[in-house]
Image 1 (cartoon, rainbow, N blue to C red):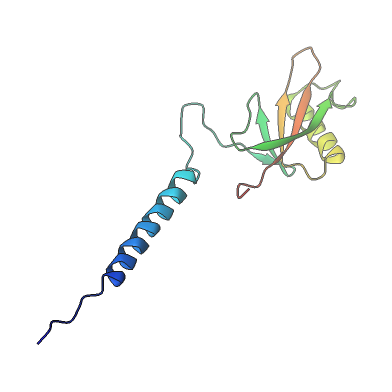
Image 2: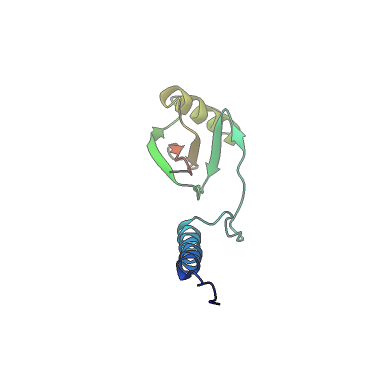
Length: 126
């Protein structure tokens, strides 16, 4: 009576498959972006006004494409230099010039020329 031979090819295939799976898992986890942002004292969420995420004296942590700069308020807000008047004038000009923009970074200067950088956020999946 002879014992049935054990097929090592099955065992080798099983080990190879497990190693390949673990290697793929390791590669995917090493190359994927972290799902959360490291919250620090400087971390905040901004308001969305007129379809723009409004950043004042700050910048987004999300990757973005710079579209252009709006210099001045086009005469709006010159006689009433209140924050909301100047902000709203810059938002209106930015929306007119860059209709597909997502965000705006306001740089307001007391007694100087106000400006705003207009941006479009990059797709996080790319």
